[in-house]
Image (cartoon, rainbow, N blue to C red; front, top):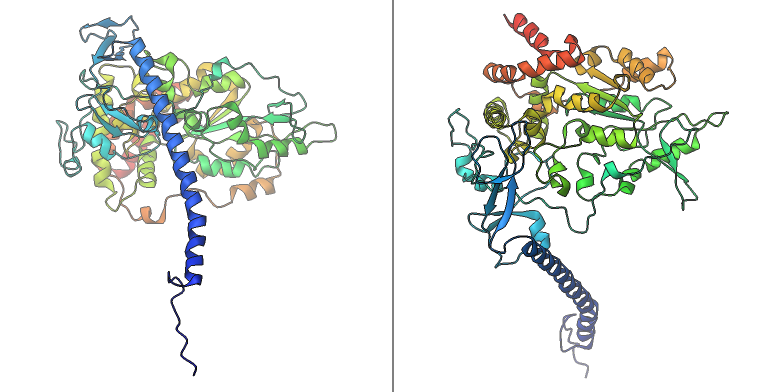
Length: 518
């Protein structure tokens, strides 16, 4: 008599096959869990030990019951810091009481800042490129999410007021990320560039495949939404300008203060172009190919100097990106492209701002807030201080007003470079007469002149980085918004005209626009 065969589930415990399956799972998962928790325990231990060492060093330097924060206020005059001095433009030293009872791991210390009134840690980003006022800063300024759009200050702005000059406002903690050693570019030894290369290149050892490294021959600087992407895409179509490069490394202005601090990390951005330069040479053995750095931020981002220990008590940076470039490459070519600061500002706002409510209303409120904050700063500080050490709410704002103060940014380059090494272009002229400007730039870079057909082909290529399709439907800024911006930029445009010539004075363009509207 044959009975029916009983079929058990595959993972059943009372069957040999099921038990074997469970054992296999355990043997594969348990080792991974052990490795994970072992590494986690070690990693947290290292962070905690580093933080304890740092706290111990702080205690050896100052009174353990106080944390010293020196805040320097400057009206263009530097002086020794004094305790308890009046607010008369002199340097002022203030002490804030803090608590050390709840130790925070170092990784959290780097990503957070402390509110000295509540001893609570608040998340803070070290990247000045992020736009928008974050929730953490709303809390720091006693503004909740619901109140952020409704609160009004004396000037009618619905954004929180700045506390730049409030003595009770603690300075944010600014530290380098863990295990990062900052390279002081001004202490670097000058390079010995190879004469058989047009591009600045120098020999290196221990690299048989590529025995040299190259850095940019030219720097294309400017402001966002001023045509730098479009211009760079056309320049690299020239046979003597390498296209094997990232357009915006942003190493000088930003990345050397975060994850890529050493000089070798900058060289890597141009390693493919270096291979191109090394491979191409004429019958005489000369290498004519060049490479450029197209990071617009190189012109206007000088925020991270406040992280440097040697600049602790300064209100303005000793050196800017212009000084660094001139130090390691004094023969560098500088190409700057500018645009009407009012039109640029609105285009920048539309391009980098997200959300369904972005438009002229939100832009108008942002403009009023930034104007209020900037004018408040200028009442007590120099323009250079306010633009290079701005209020934290300004760096996070969607309206990046300070970028359009071109005369201040360009003066940094005219201060260290000869005029014949700097070429400034108006985007409005470049858009109308592209081929003429390309020919002018190629001559400026000392590369071979192109035939008219090739130059025309490059000029007729499709434009790059234009306004998004969704933003085209958004209305233009309000007339009253443009009036506010026109009043702010009036003096700065006059200074730009005196620096570059009246053709670059955008007040003339604004006057022509008013005449047309009438």
